[in-house]
Image 1: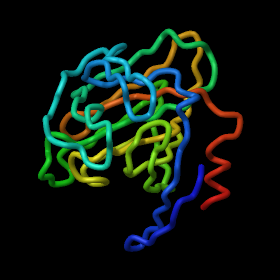
Image 2: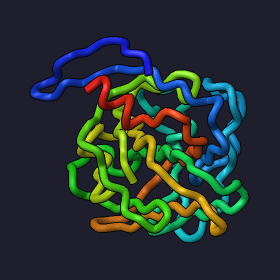
Image 3: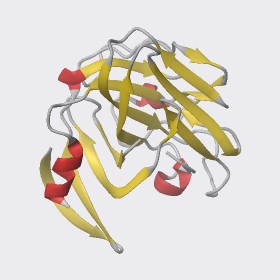
Image 4: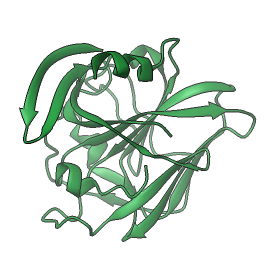
Length: 212
């Protein structure tokens, strides 16, 4: 992580960082969409796969703060799960990509949902920062460093047609593979992409402690 600048936004200290992760990527999925080639981050994003349940949504509206709008212009919608079976056992980090492309005029509270990884509810880490993701996705968006997401409301955090990334969800993969599930609380869940990365030797929790 390389610090770029620190600004104060109301009562929150928002930090901008580069997250360089392309070399660790195992698989990226374009939820609800086709294969994406020639992305700004130098890898292909797979067509939607490994899913069970849900429907597909799409929009032609522009997505702010990214050169890869097509990743966020499609989504899998509704209660659903992804079961990725073909990766070796080990420790991984999962990045979950979201954008509110339906309720573009809000208000907050129309869509809230839980995300489970390996059947455990993901809990948002209160240490959030805006980040420009380099060598992964060329976007500038709100990135939430997560431990393992509950009651997520994308619109309340970033508004509409803007990426939100829940990054670094820890997952221990064994013989049953990697499972990501979405469960609606109010309205139906929505997800734009899933990225699975090998866990680095030095954990991001330690890095966060150094910069907080």
